[in-house]
Length: 589
Image 1: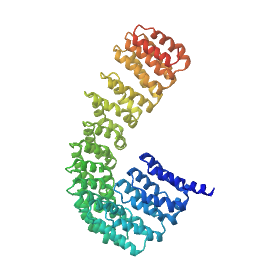
Image 2: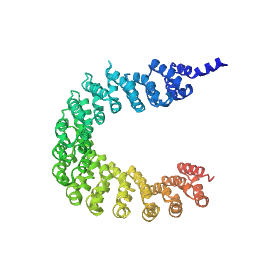
Image 3: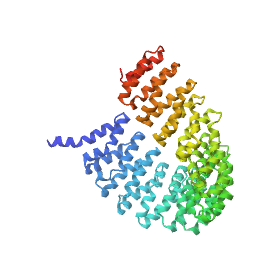
Image 4: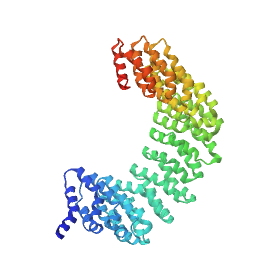
């Protein structure tokens, strides 16, 4: 019996070995995902002595299997016996941190960072820190790039001699021959600076930052820009000018657009980090240059930051800086040749109105909004219309209606049907921002006019638009303002308009509810069953099928059923077909 017990206890490992040697990747992947279950079955001691050595020695597999393993091991602390044995997880993770596939290495580093916090300070020096050194001085660039992500987690908890070694290793990696390693070091520079003592930030980090920021590879230089934000927040104000600003100025004018793009993308964070004085003297001219950059990507990234940049300017000089330095650049961007730049600007420009106040908005910003509302690019127009509410708060609905609404009406009646279609799609959004009274006064007639447009796509979109408006403003509003106008079209001499009535009823019945549908809409649909045009009659059958579920059973039996039976005996084949379909769907047979 004892022998059988022994075999039983070997069973999980044997299954795992079999599955990990299987040719099917999916099977191998599943077995790795079940590792925690296997470790539980083995118990902590055998997990340490058998499972982990097996994993360390035998894993050379597809990247997705290795990725799953790297992730699993980060959650293994309790399965190996808790924090005092957590160092047993280091060997398999160390080998995973040196593989060729970046995603696997990154996941292994993430798991190593996670379990580093569970090491006691002693274990950290005895087990973890030597691992970091081995990775940092490995022959392959893969291990050296992984080491960059581990310095910051062990530095705060080791002795000062070990700290000095870690700093030296980091310095070496920042000047490594391989660009990939320098890139990894640059990406972790800010994080490492945060755990260093201030003196070392000044003596070590600044020189590394300056070197990386003038690296020959633009991919390294742009990561140094990211680090600049962290470094600037750590230094006292008086040191920023001498230690950080020369490098930042150089980055903002870098010959590679990617580096300039990074500066533009991080501009608000840089602005907060360096404070108001440097912003006024240095960042304002730099921002102007980025808004005028020759590369569209850079201009778009800078345009995206216009509102944030202006919000974070020192209050005493905010308005002056915006009016004299920023607004002239913004005016140029409104007519930029690149639509991404215009679109980026349109998504934030409305926010300037709250900063500049009523008079400046009316005088300087409204003309720009108008120009963008008429832009040929639909995204620009949408971004303006989506943000009308913040201008509304500043200048009030009346002023807005006098200036922007004529432009919206003009677009709504544009000769190109696609432009009309775009405006219809924005209508529910506008209605929500402008409120019901204003909508009824200015825009309701437009919405009704679209229902009789000569292009079918417009009539269809206008029908959907009505449904969205009813959802916004409620059934009572629909009953008073929309339903009478829609039903009035049932007597239109043009059969296409009569059909639009039916399409509107289909769309509105659910939003309006049973009472309005039964009382107001149903009689009109039933009356139209006698229409001269067969297309109208078969659409009556389709409408009855659509609104049937909203009606009560009494109306269905007494009013709907006789009409459908009459249509089912129609001489037109299509009318017959749709009437029979409605009878069977509504179970009226």
